[in-house]
Image 1 (tube, rainbow, N blue to C red):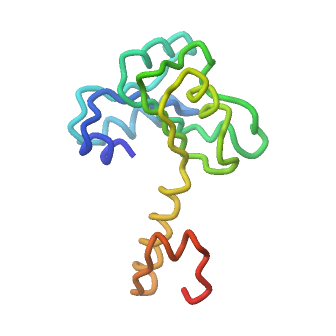
Image 2 (cartoon, rainbow, N blue to C red):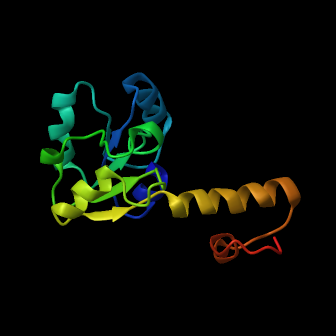
Length: 141
């Protein structure tokens, strides 16, 4: 996620993750050209999100047993940011609803999952399928 965002101009990315240690190792391994990739330590570090171009929810909070929850409190959302939630079910998580409420731009994880599925099909079977075929649930795949 961070690599693609950096390739498209994001310079400061805030990653919300369940584990600071895991997120830190991941972001340290990335060489995506970002000036900063920030991962939160304690909850009070959410204020750092205000200095970022993109805020990513990579925590899983907002789906499954945590539907209706957000990993980041509503007061830290701002209108001039892109908010990406790796979750895609529900389509609009509480994280994305908070972002929309302040006029932020939002993207859920469905597109990412579909592109990953297309690549997995190609790697495992050698067959090329399109995003559109997967999105439609084309039975000929």
